[in-house]
Image 1 (cartoon, helix red, strand yellow):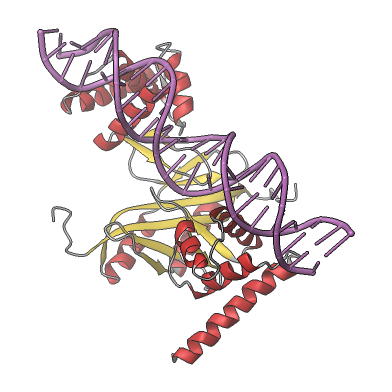
Image 2: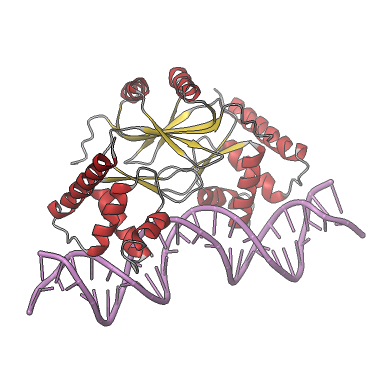
Length: 152
Length: 152
DNA sequence: TTCGCTGCAAACCGTTTGCAGCATT
DNA sequence: AATGCTGCAAACGGTTTGCAGCGAA
């Protein structure tokens, strides 16, 4: 993908996120615009403080509470996802990509996405057999690079 | 199972938990004995405050910090597990039963255990293919009783 | 007798919230 | 002009921790 294509995709993403807000009848303030473009650009899973840091370079003075408030709003609009991994502050990602679960490298904190149709099906089966419907689920694999003994 | 058998199993469990502590070279104080017997008796997934409440009826005056400290100790001995379900304080269970995952009834908060050999295998496969070993995982199904519409 | 453990109160840390003023609509 | 949003600072809530004294070994 060329840099120009990347730019376009990112702008599209920002536009979609902005529309999501406008559709919900909320004001698109400078703070929100800043955060939206930061989120659109993010292909990792940053935490609130990191998002605040990035947003500040776009709109100096934006407050952490506004970041938190906006993240909560965006989450309830369904345009971003919040992940609470073990022993760490919440991490966020835009909801553009299809459903997937996460592997967390316990050494580096790196997050790797993966999807398994088969696991999803098995989960649904199990719930159904026990008389339940799945509202949502959480599957996290805490992993270590192969051959990286913990006795390093 | 008769009541007598239940008593015996519970006492066994307390004994094993106590031994785990003694083996680790830590003192078995009244507070710890109380918490151990509470844990041995618990077949649900209580949170720290609830465990404290139960322990108090056995040893009035035991402090919440001691409960937290002991839970952390027991966790690192591997004799209990700590679960951090979504939007709730940590819940604990003794590590006597075999590995399993959890379904959480989003309406009642009830925790249902389940195990799936097939899901476990798939997880390991996925991690391996990506060049990782699983250290541990977390699979939680947030569910609702079938036919219980959210528009209730 | 030793020194690990306890209770208390205060700190912690990520996150939320009350409020007065500001800026988007 | 109206009112939804912002920044600030303070509160929150679950959990951890420093400290002086207590009690298990």
